[in-house]
Length: 390
Image 1: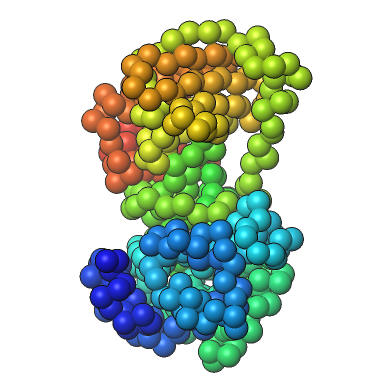
Image 2: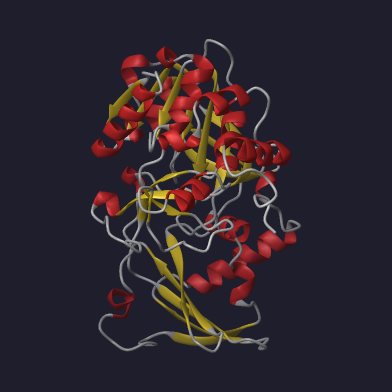
């Protein structure tokens, strides 16, 4: 039995679930009740994975109203756009590019934002408009600016907001640039992930103001950073929980195909063979990927699975100069590795993993981020203890 089968499927049932989890607080409950999630959901949705078995199916409200309603009031994310709007058919497209986030994540991030009456807020990533509606109800629409890169999404969100009697400023533009015309802001919240905090964000938030944003390295792993802006324009703070958001368009990484690394040759091409006792399975958890990613820059993994339960973990660099493979076979305690190029990517991952293990296998809550004129530094336990590449 899921948490929802014992509760009414609808706003009240979802509110109970969120309050039990500690995500929805009494401060945000009036906004939750005033701007229900279903009012900010398109007719065609692709329900998320949490408790769902229709991950690949499009659900249209007019065709399956009960399924649509139940999906909206589960504590799960819902994809609302594929491939920047180019794909609209059944099943699913190649890449999800817009969504209505998991309600637990929505209210956890709003809680981390620590808004106060009268605060002005810049939201990056309007999406369906629900987050902007919640902020507008809590703070007044005149205090909310939301930036959305996709013109069609922005127009749909404006329509939903207007129908709810809310008229925050919804601007079509690059979220990395913020919206300087209304700056400075007391708070900034991003509903897309980034790998680098845009300079404009720090410049447009008042000293003492707060930035809440999902942040993750190219390699993978991601968490929500809560940064406080200082008088000198720097920003620093802890990560407050795991996340998995779609990347801001301005910071997407184009991942080249394996064939471009092999130069037209068959694997293992010129790869140098070795063996490792570190299982590829040990480096796949989200928080482990994060710890590796902040030490192994400009590289990313990909898993090629086989019917017998084995798989190949591919590692590639964004410069298209180096690659590595590590073959996982169930029951083995030694694994075959091939590496090619100026970077020995598996060796870099191995060193990063050993560092993480030596630190007591820290989770996201022990990491933090500082951003200033010298760049960005992820740290462990204290800003005075930056994590550096091996």
